[in-house]
Picture (tube, rainbow, N blue to C red):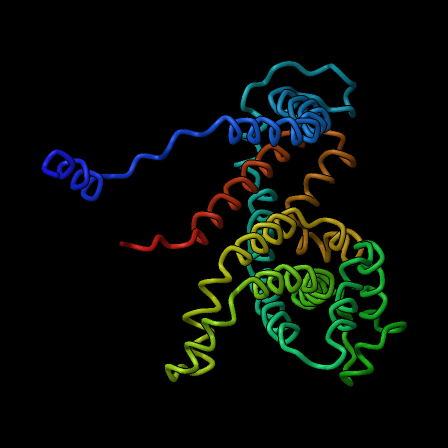
Length: 311
């Protein structure tokens, strides 16, 4: 009895050791690695060479307008040019502002839509399928559709609101039109992710909260939002990255105009690569876009990390 006491006390007071993995667990782990290996190898084969070549270009002066291969090693000159460029800094500000505003509005709308679709009502299954239609429409098609609807002569937006505005000719009205088109396309995507998160929350906790006298708002704030954080994190990461890389809706609806008022980083990158054919400077912009996206994703995952329960 006395011989076992220290062992029990030590196990209770100290940190428990994780039991060694069994042979079956190690075999399952190796099988999992083997199953995902082809996909990882394929992704590396598709992305590793273009990414590496792009990084190589960013340290060279490669401009097709003066001849391919005419430039040499320039070190960080392309990055210095980028950081000192007012066009790049302005595009960064517009991109960050668009990503923040669009994702915030779309998340709020999508959360309300997910909460509605989570309730039981007649026709819910049909509505769940119907809301995926905007997301399934190609972005080029949806952007062209919204560009036509905002047109002063061919569209019906002015007719519905009883106004006469050249939407895509003004700075703020152009951004408003782009935000509407982007929200119509991406709100269903966020809503489906949040709906999936809502469906895995046990209903018993809501019943217990209702018995304790909690209001709907208290249950939503204290139960739904904390338990929905993993789904919110996934939705925010995907949407922030796609918003930060927005190009097609800008290209179709405004072409970066009026002037340069709607030019984003991806649009500037396209302009540098395919119009100015400056692969060195364009490579630096592309590399910085990748770095910024990784930073944004890491920040969101850190902020949305579930809080640890203290014992």
